[in-house]
Length: 192
Image 1 (cartoon, rainbow, N blue to C red):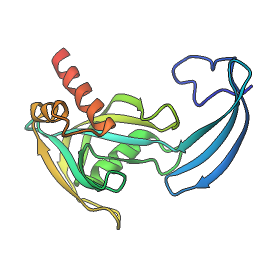
Image 2: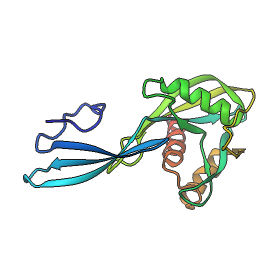
Image 3: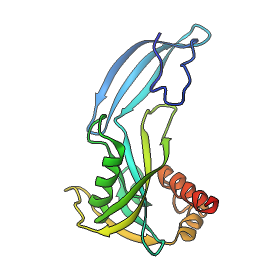
């Protein structure tokens, strides 16, 4: 019997489910798509999709004036621009997420963090994807140099936290990692 994904939540996989097979359907640049054959709890056989993702890191970057650095960029899946926290994929499954977070912050915004603190870890779409994003709080920011990828075009913006929270509740910010990260940071500030 095989478990499903990491056991980072401290729970064993349900013994009523058994992965009988896994077939690679498509290998992509960012994700791999598999079809699993699973024996489910009642003994029936089901085909389940799995998107395998090597992971990512993101940053809630807070400037000295309290404003948060955000990036506005075009997202093909939505065919529009979105306002998000800086983020990016790990270079390998073994890359430490704090290293990736620092790299993505500098690449996308041109800022270097003097301090990084893990804010939260999240799973983006647990029904069919194993992507995990570690989100860091970046403070003591120093200007550096932006290093965008050849196919990356984004604008860096600074926003007040209250403005961003309102944009979430007005449904203007819908990106899951951004929503959860901004609300987590807001909650952290209110508890301190």
